[in-house]
Amino acid sequence: MVTIAVSSESADEPRVAVSPDTVKKFTGLGAKVRVESGAGLRSRFSDDAYRAAGAEVVSRADALAGADILLKVRRPSVEDVSALKPGAIVAGMIDPFGERAALEALAATGATVFSMEFMPRTTRAQSMDVLSSQANLAGYKAVVDGAAMFGQALPMMMTPAGTVPAAKAFIMGVGVAGLQAIATARRLGAQVTATDVRPATKEQVQSLGAKFIAVEDDEFKQAQTAAGYAKPMSAEYQAKQAELIAQHIKTQDIVITTALIPGRPAPKLISRAMIEGMKPGAVIVDLAAERGGNSELTEPGKTVETANGVKIYAPLNLAGTIAVNASSLYAKNLLAFLETMIDKKEKTLAVNWDDELIKGTLIAKDGKLVHPNLQAKRS
Ligand code: NAD
Image (cartoon, rainbow, N blue to C red; front, side, top):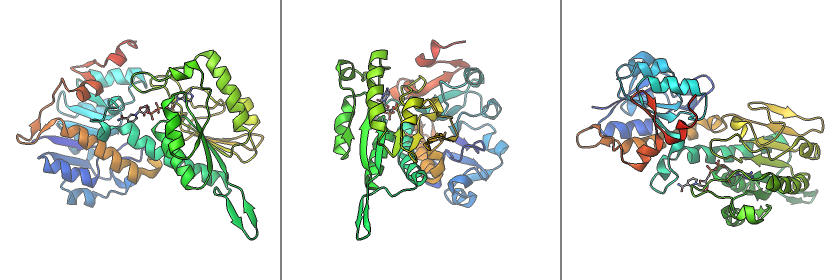
């Protein structure tokens, strides 16, 4: 029988790696699930709900001791991983480009570590795509929080007492988070514009009823990599883009920034001078804060208010602020991934090392970091 351990996350991470719903599915697959008492409380999953779904609710030490698999939201501690069975499977958002020494220490435990952020963006892996499930919620929440901070109505309202103008929302970076931000801002009645460097996003923006603005030169036409991500843009392109943004942003009320390039610091798209040119009361929600932010004045984890009355909100874990939804979706992503490595008949672990999803996400095995994206950065 496969034993799955789930421990509480740290104080700044409200999400949890299993839901009562996925516990039920895991037990249906013949696995035993041991959840640390209280692990789900911040996602409103009680110990009783886990028990009713078939989990054993125990102490942290008892959850971890000798388990075959540890499911986490964030990178686990070496201490916790060392309590598992030697070579046990660990799956979570390991932050593979984060603190390198700690990553090497995690690998040195001998655990078989899967980093869910590396899940290939293929059709088959869609149900396991944690970046998408969490970015989608973050894009939604960015608009809701931005609207609350803006403190004015978003839709145009024509009333006998006069007309309230529609607020203007500008979404920078149209990946999963950006698309949901556009849709949410539209639903709330804002007048929405959006920008990206990948040409494929133009049609997506327009299909959501928003206006696309970008520097559409030859470099823009080639800005998407084979993997579907943006390339870092040249200094020349950045200068042209900055000019366009500087003009546009002056008139905007809510700006949501989501621009990222995998494995790199977030591109700085909004300068101090641009912010100084914005309207008092305008709000920037910087979803790229975890990677340094898309604005020059972003302070990750904080809200800054400038002398001209512009607020720059830079949350580090926006999906975590709607932990019930975020945990439910994240837990389903993990379940879908784990289903590929549990033999349903024999009720044993059966990892297919040749599977592209396994190869794509496996970062550590037999004491070493094994992922190709992590080799060049050896310290
Ligand atoms: P992301 O979080 O890596 O980046 C967000 C957006 O920022 C991207 O659209 C990117 O083009 C944009 N960006 C980067 N640099 C920029 C700059 N200088 N100026 C303006 N915009 C900039 O993106 P994501 O949400 O992870 O999506 C990445 C890709 O993966 C997309 O092509 C998406 O369609 C694709 N995807 C595919 C699947 C699937 O097929 N299963 C699932 C999810 C996403």
